[in-house]
Image 1 (spheres, rainbow, N blue to C red):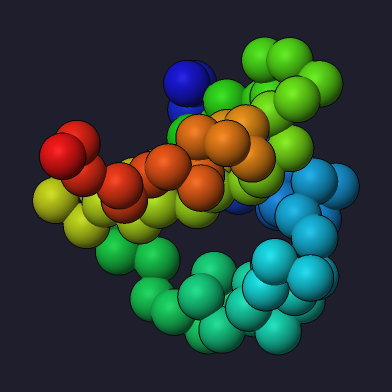
Image 2 (cartoon, rainbow, N blue to C red; image 1 turned 180 degrees about the horizontal axis):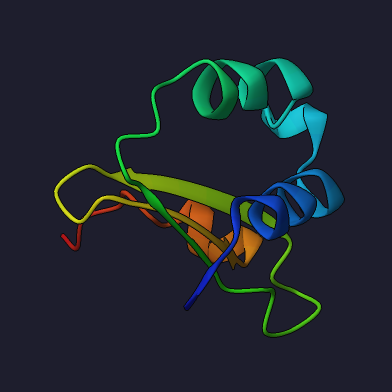
Length: 84
């Protein structure tokens, strides 16, 4: 993951984000245009393989970073499963 400009982050958000998954223009405006900046950095990891189709966005206030990265459908489905 590497640091990018807000414009590069925005470009990736709109290029890869699917409205069906909630990544809409309204979400962008609410969370990245209206929200105070507070010195946040923007970090991006583009999809490493074609099967990494699910865009994930994490805001870490402690590290002052917004992170955008991609996972596979299976990895997202299993994200919150606990081993028995």
